[in-house]
Image 1 (cartoon, one colour):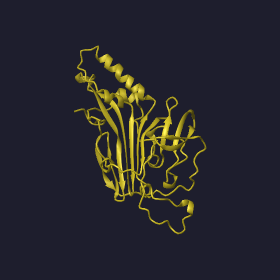
Image 2: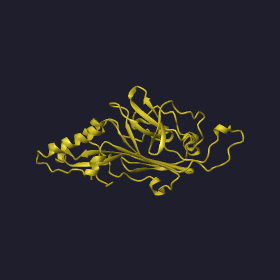
Image 3: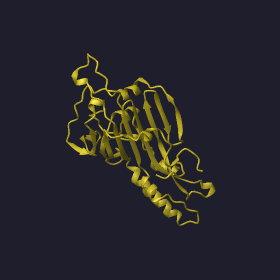
Image 4: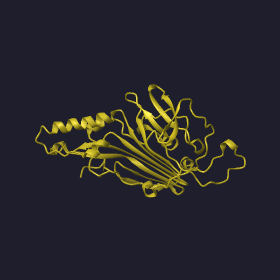
Length: 285
């Protein structure tokens, strides 16, 4: 995706009060295949987790409206004598969407959440028909040495910090104490089995949670993710919703584009990298 300039405009914030975020989504990794403690019950023992890569698109209800608003503003600009700068067709397709990528390997893991909006130029400089694609989100990487991340809305990296007990738990990948899946129909999404249930409070919405990760600590009884923008850090590391269908304003729509197990990972892609569009918090160039 082409890097371009921009930050979120007032119009975008009004339409998109909740920035897209990482995910009804999960990420984790396992340690080496060490012997289980002698006092660990058989049902608590886990095999070594293989490498896993997940690539998803997340779209809130306002996503389509965000793209429609952009089109309306461009049409209005065409009726003026102001200089017009449109974003590309590929960039327009990203508006109002987010991409979440997650990587899991022995003793390390990473996730990247990036959402795209548009920003207009300075009104006082007659640049409000100058449109730019902008990014928000974050890219996180953890291994035994610590946690490192970069904020995509300003491309500011954070210093590596020692792992907290919770972060270290995301790498150990202990099996669930209760690995019973939720009651509901199962089906295949991206080559993996998931169990589908209604989202509580949004009965027309459906969420389908991966059933194959209980032995590595992945939640197999998720009630869905209303918005990845308000998801907790634990949600991103512990829950894999393979597909979610919206019902009105909530929840977010989640589509899995790829789910691979046991394949070689792109090690360089795991490392925190800058935004693919102009960081939303930075002044326009």
